[in-house]
Image (cartoon, rainbow, N blue to C red; front, side):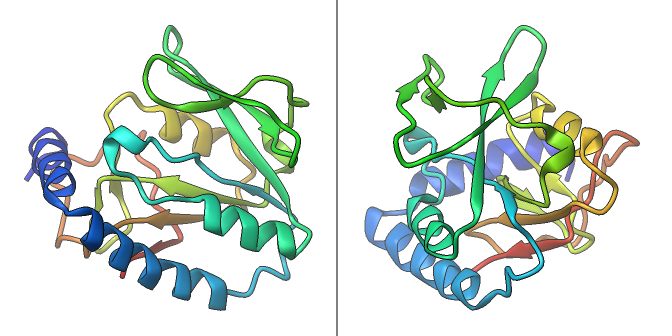
Length: 181
């Protein structure tokens, strides 16, 4: 299947998950993340949950990483250029929900993409080669291609990888890992 078909299918599959199913799937993902060794990284970019899209709740992950004294970085989306600007996410950072349902920082210090060590990446589905399908605007492909070559990437997904996304192109950036329940 191509990205367009997969995007539609997995948006629907995610929408059909009950709140109870989401909670159980999240718990399994959290267990895996909490066992992960983060000793080699300090500056971690994490996406904030778009609740209306039934994305994984990243706030327990944020609390876990803060307890490990990691610097957390979040983004603000520019829909005119399909780019992200990155900010240090401190405990006192105020968040506003954009018209797209994305929590974004209001009073945060900008953070250089070149200083990011690890990126948690949102996705709808991935394949066994760790390519992903997102929402189709290319925000994360642009972002990841601007990171250092050795940045680590971890996708978070409720669904197991499919065999192959049929229309991968030169702009698609494979992830290092995908964590599923």
